[in-house]
Length: 517
Image 1 (spheres, rainbow, N blue to C red):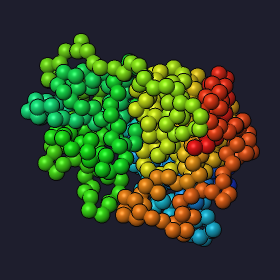
Image 2 (cartoon, rainbow, N blue to C red):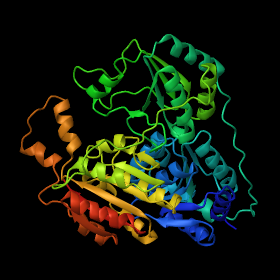
Image 3 (cartoon, rainbow, N blue to C red):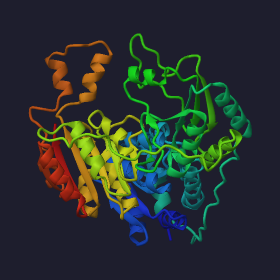
């Protein structure tokens, strides 16, 4: 038995049974060990950003880590953008990064790099394995770090630690510390502030507080105490749809966000942070709430958010039987027809969404109306990229489909963002994943056109246009998907889109719709 075998055994003993991988020479002993462990499902990504993004999607849907396998510093660097999204989503993840044998590092071979320095900004925890005897304690520590509280753990595996002989391991379950008890002082302070604010109170729910059972408690507080419920701009995971409490999403545009929060005197945070503008803009503040707004944390990430909401409900004297307002019927709008638009796509998807679907939204500007409409759709889970780094949508959908093979996954994807990790379609085809990808093909970085206006540039010239538009040549998503092994078709009218979506939803397996808008 070698160190790589021990590493696999520790992971499997703790129910880490999926490995998203893009290995290289330094990881061959770990690959060989994985080959001896049929209980581990190994999923190849053709780019490391697919690997880390898929692990993020898997973790969000299971609340458990998958393991990734990355090749030295450059391989890790290729996956950093979606590690950033995962860290911002508080997703549990264990990255195994291979490195040269310890005695080879002083030779400064071409792939030598500062792996710790690369990993640290996008990880909550980093450790280098000291040798074969350190594999078991280091791997157990990585597992613990990925879940208490949930976050990104990166474990560096030198080649000689992987191939070195190790005593047979008999790893058991890692004992995790329970979440800290509810902070009763925070509960009392929050309840007092809600009572004194005369209805000018907002509450942001995130993480486990955005699951259906916790949302029901938040909804009871909202109805009884006139508290407005919000989600953050970028949502890691929220359970949405008919019969569920539907928080209002804080909008991305800074003026709209400030207007939404302008009359909030008390803002209560449950699992999240105070919302701020994505960027600094000339003449505009960075905070979205007024400077005199009282911001209180009821419970933070890593604490028991459900229990904190229950404690607040009890402190406020709200009965568990308190009724809440649920979304029931779609707006009374005629079905759109003719030329396809982004709003028409949002309405069509929301109306046709299957029960218990998973929606991965990286359509950026194009699908903004979908979130509001999703309150009326069938019950589902909704996820977004949470770190602002684009290229997470296709991988996230891939990981979610592996985590939940019995559920339909819908990926709302911007064409510019999708090109960052288009290789994920190949993994969907290889694994025969039940993912419908809808590409909003507007052939531009539309969000950046808006950002030009936000910084005061109202007219752009040829140089700027060439950096913001995706035409000349236009991307052919049907050909791209088919080249990756995914069946695809193009829609330019509402009628054609509806027919393609109905077909894709009626069967299993990956399918891509290029929606030209």
